[in-house]
Image 1 (spheres, rainbow, N blue to C red):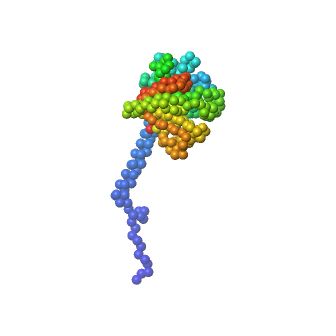
Image 2: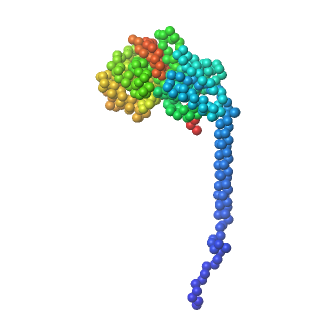
Length: 379
């Protein structure tokens, strides 16, 4: 018997196992899949570059823009130059600027822009400029853009429009993404222009909130922004309350009336978010309803502390409800398309921070999805 061990038979040229036809077929499919995927990626990249090139050229997409700018804002002149440079870089050729004046508010400027053929009207300023421009565009179907350069810019924030980034805001304003937004109206029924509905996009109210806004130092507002409102509010914590009859029409069109209601402030909201706080968590800017809040406090500073706790509670929970620890504050929250208030004594009224003066009789109504606003695209 030989001492040599039997050697394994050689299989193929590479001394390995021969691939089966199934393995070859699967490898071929995988290779083809990789090739097709690579081609698809190249085609997609090409289409994206082509789309970007066409968008950059804008030769097939020329739109006439009118920028309504509030020159009283400290950064207005610089913002105007920035807008001009942006439009030139993006090949947006049809651009005009209209400045607001003491005798020509944003509404008058927007109407002028429409008469001159503007297809998109862009409000450049704070909430006051946005509100007055919106009052002219509501119901027209014309698109409205917003470049926020105010102190609060509450409506822009609620709509997700970039604040503090001019290029980003301009990109939104000159895009095609838009939402239809409700517009609130306040009527001073005991005034000379009782048939004129003063538009608002955020919050309108009578009582403490209007008193606080009216007494805010504009210079302090420029310096410390929102803190100026709280400083003003502290002066009026012990101001007299208001009493009146309140009628609210619910979403089911049933009207509920409460007489001799005592409160510190009554607010109607289309948007409920302010920086750091949620005043009206249920407010929606396109549901065809306003959110009404009747607020009262008692026991002096304890009541105001409780009210602050209520606001913090609903800011955290995102629900329109009182804090379980509150004992000396009330927030009654209702929704509906209309409300009417008759006061025993006159009170200041405001819409989006603009004071309308004193009144004893107001009505609040909503125009559902009346305003077409350019907003960031989500897809």
